[in-house]
Length: 434
Image 1 (spheres, rainbow, N blue to C red):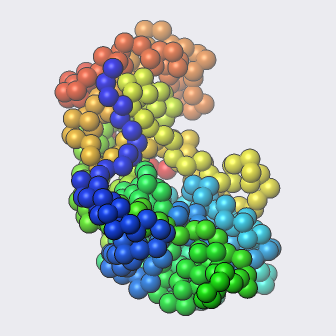
Image 2 (cartoon, rainbow, N blue to C red):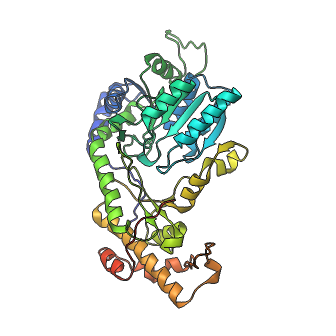
Image 3 (cartoon, rainbow, N blue to C red):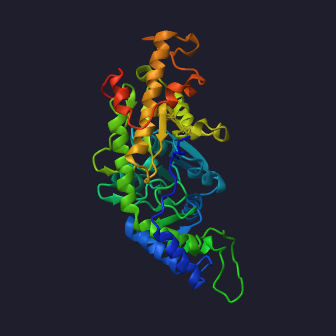
């Protein structure tokens, strides 16, 4: 069987092991140490944010951000619905109330909707205490506009930039300008410390307090003195050594993932019903994960059939994040809109995007998808399956059963066959939008 292609595996440069060996040799194994300081200073230089504290996870960073900004019981926190659970669960940790907002074309919180709701909230006298923007898949919202809204309406802006290390918009790094910016270095991120995160702010007092709370709120006494309780949230010096080496390779990792995105688009972007979103002007995304939208009315195959076809070839892929307002845990939560994020979840697929992927790896993924399209078309021509008809009244699109997706038609698509498969009859048309 072909080697497993994972969605976003760690990519080591080789320098990590050397720095970890140095750390062991120096016996700086405790949570604090010179590698931790070097990692935080490197993050500050990269993001342009003056103060950074490295933590055990991005979720821990968001938890501290909410606490430090005074968010508490019954306060409203407005946030994007299209995100990972770790980007909203800390709202519940502090007893606050999440309100979920729909997204725009870039899968980012809809700023037009946000502004409309803020103006309506003024009239009701019920503005949010904080707004969390999520930089999804490396995309960044209009930072200048959010800053203006935060100043006008008085909410604390938290930038969840967990997926956007290395992304910029109009020359500003993801998270720059927010009261607090959150980053993640989980094993699947563009750079990793195995597990870890960071909280960044231009407010030195805020980061100083974050470091205090992250180290069990220990007072400066010879014994262990506590006037409040804290958390065990600091990143270890050993993990930070990995981060120092990873950060040095960040530019190369961003360049690789952007190349992977363009290679996918070259192979698949002209297929009917397949859409790879362009960057808005000024955005330079790190393309953490390449995402494709598949409209079954035009493609003849849906997102799930494509995912199953890839899995049959030992290739990992994944739907876009399931909107938080559709998750059972948030069944009673308030939302504003939701149709765009629901459509994105139903039709969006994340493709393998690890920065160590070769062009041959990308071509293998693309060949598998094109083979599944051909197989779908052949099955439709030979024996339509009425149980698989789509709801669109304009035409009857018949999809393969999940068993058919695992047949030899898909497993026979090998490296080098993309061009041949395209010549088999898949037309080139413009991309779709919604």
